[in-house]
Image: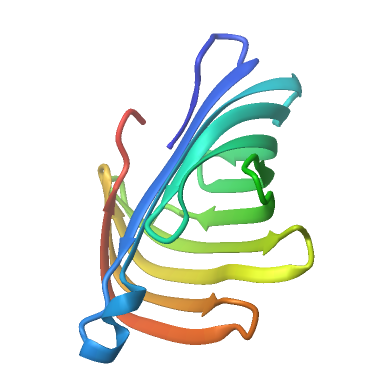
Length: 173
């Protein structure tokens, strides 16, 4: 969710929440939830600085400083941000979300999305990365279809892949 907090679009609210469940017993330790929220001030159209926080199943709660770029139109969305997680041992993150939603009919759009994140402890040690691909339909506020998640964990980039169906919704749009 990205919502302007004022008419001039100087202040934005951003939130992303997702849960990833693996069903094989050996993969269940990689079940994960993420909630990332921040408020940013745009000093140029779509370019701003913000503060917020992240909750992740593996690392807990962390306050963040964020730099963002957002470009949205009727059939596209591009979000890029870099974040510094402010904790005793800081980590740094880059996140990208790109959506393309061309109209198929009056009430239906094609839904395509790529999301990617990478997180590094002290800019030296890989902590976590993922790439998420979605292809489906967008009907009103619901999107559904096929999805693939490619996850990498730790300094050795232990990989996990999760392929299946996805359902998502957007609120406050």
